[in-house]
Image (tube, rainbow, N blue to C red):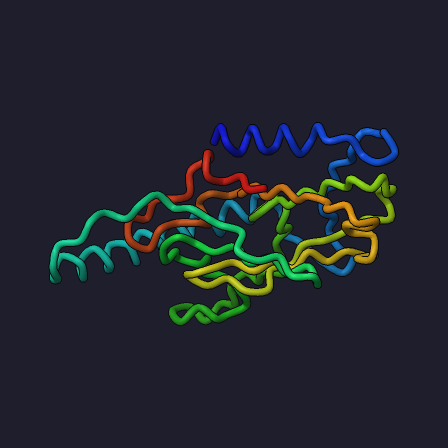
Length: 203
């Protein structure tokens, strides 16, 4: 945790070429997107937690029938790749249980589960703040976040800039800060434990 805090302090105190304070920009919700409320997200999280408990119980039963194994380590996430077109791969250090929503149908009730497009990604999942070191104006660097893939092994998010040519412009590398907003969405398939706060911020 201290390492992340020191790195964050270093990133935020680097002066921009113009001598102006560095702007920390936040993702915006696209006009086309209709997101559900925080209360509705909370309801879905409770349903997801019940599903996690069921799957963890099943996994523990299977492990009990096999040879002894060491306990699962704490959940950790690594930014493994950031592509030039804005796709960010976040790898998990162990299999997690992805949320049970994504436009699929519930086998028991036939109800269509909440779709990823209904989430405000920055509010509900991962907040990605962009730090421009090139003195660009905020309105020129607007961006939104879209979940492209979520598996037990990784999460892929598309950082969609309205004007990507301004990113890291002038040969100066800009920075991004990643903060897990809902640790309960990142739970170990073995232990059921969520990612902890000290591991939920990445730079």
